[in-house]
Length: 174
Image (tube, rainbow, N blue to C red; front, side, top):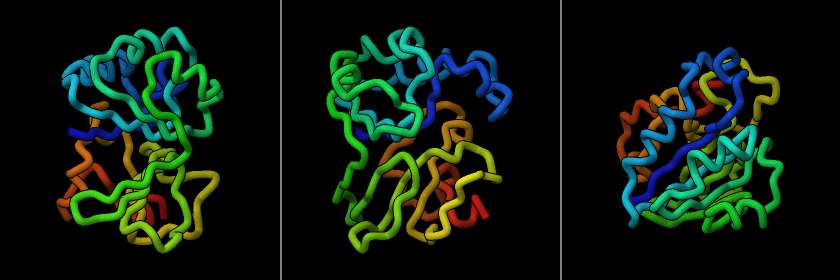
């Protein structure tokens, strides 16, 4: 199974204030990720951690595969991530699955004509954002860890028109 998660910001205490997260959000994330199996793939849409100790406590010894789309707060090098258990590190992942072309990224990307959906993070659960993307349209889906109760989301959930976690970005952000 393929799962998505984004904006974990492990070890970033200000997330409690900025995004109304519980004080133990890192522990909740770890507990939820511990449910994944060894044949699962977790695709992280960026902004993994604030300090490397918090990263290692959650991600270093996991049994599942980990792919990362780098976020604006992911300052460690690709080599650092690879030496800390990540199987793939890039800025965008394009998948052709479930009859859809899906572009995965941290921030929303302009419609390049290739994708049916762009699933991205970055905006969390905050409606007012300082860098709104004027190109957002019905193809963009916001994944927010706060709205998923700190659980990874199955990629195949995009097939459901009534999905409560993958919000149409243009509607959510405007």
